[in-house]
Length: 277
Ligand code: NDP
Image (cartoon, rainbow, N blue to C red; front, top):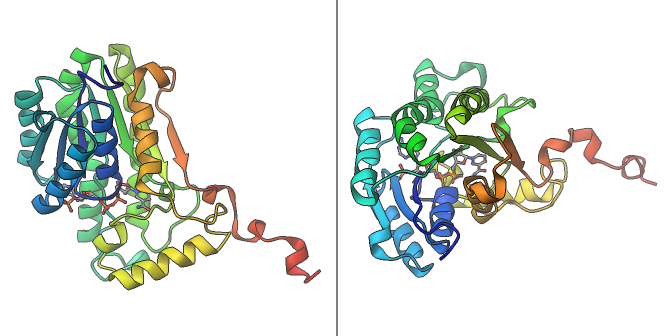
């Protein structure tokens, strides 16, 4: 008997990064997991890693679907019910900082719609559609937000930042509504984590490495001096999905960011360094 044996879990955005690490960790703890994303080849890689972590093949339900398409959402939910029989945990992890060449205040309205569709609307729709099943199991929902939600500004990507801020407030509202039925809702807010996130923004691998090493080596970016690993966030998601370990946490967004949100640029520097003492 392992920590999640007998539990049926949906993790969205499993073909890469944080979602993949989360699916693998759930497998290690004996869960039955629906893994989903648009890229079938990368989902197969996730499946291989889950099998290596000890998952039985019948405990992995692989669904290729676009989460911004209502039919894709229905497919994920119905195939989970058919293959795994119920839903105990919904992890709304899929998300993206979509780019189209516009930035800052000039970001296009088309980009606004696409950004909100994946980062906010798809979460709202998945929660509305799974609510009845999660009430039956007295289940858990974990949303994946971001420190981009603020209060610090992210002027380059205002729609991404605002979509995550909307998600945080939605998490709080839904948490208080659903706890009356025994369903717990929380979220995690990662800082900079090394995943496919920058690649999905169209950055070539070399540029991605350059950006990551800049962030890690500047203490006003990440005081811990390292980028987070997908596994760091997966541990937190699994903790919030585990009623035995986190039952009294309701509607919170737990930050895991190596200290990033605690430093304003000038505060990261030592007065002695500024004065050359
Ligand atoms: P990745 O790009 O590595 O993974 C994103 C996942 O989301 C992929 O599996 C992708 O699957 C899926 N996805 C994106 N769009 C869709 C869609 N329309 N339909 C279905 N699936 C979709 O990024 P991360 O692992 O970093 O991101 C995971 C979450 O963490 C996101 O919500 C992100 O905003 C958040 N986050 C990440 C941070 C970071 O520094 N990495 C920091 C803070 C928050 P596919 O391409 O196969 O469709």
